Length: 231
Image 1 (cartoon, rainbow, N blue to C red):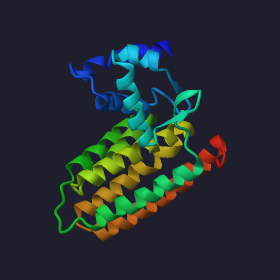
Image 2 (image 1 turned 120 degrees about the horizontal axis):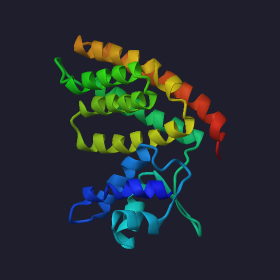
Image 3 (image 1 turned 30 degrees about the vertical axis):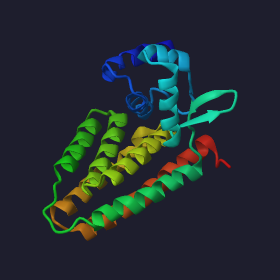
Image 4 (image 1 turned 45 degrees about the vertical axis):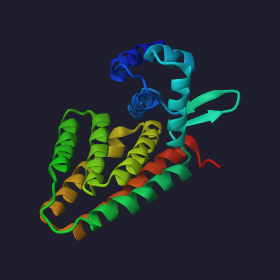
């Protein structure tokens, strides 16, 4: 925990002169997504508040925001913990992804599409795979789908999916088999990109739906072995 707090103290500069709960929540959200605070970790108000140089009230408000996003959970008389998802949670995340991401592709309108961000994310994943950095491949995969959602140009959609992708990272940290989990999707992302480059949004939607179905099956298979079915 001391090493974690030392690393977190380096984020203090990100707060600027006005240490708002939203900015603290942004820092903690990023750290949770990176696996800095793994699922099941108890978050100490004193340690985190001291590392970031923020008041207890500001930190508690940040905790409240992240609890609302389903990244943290408050347990009576025990404190605040990084949430451990159930298998049902994982299934619900993928159900939401399928509804939103496929709808984004379906509603793209006439080509050409602004695909620079998607192409960059595909390249990022390919480079990370060549270097054998499978966690970075997972990060690139999330970037790909964030860029896909961004094609909708809707703030509400982006905000919703930011929370969904952050929750998804919680599952990935528990599975902890990054190569097995992410390697197959490097090629699949490329195929979706190629379909969109060709202006074929129907093919892209079919590829995306199949991708999400296979990914759900693969993640749930491993996740169930790690945490069980939940309640």
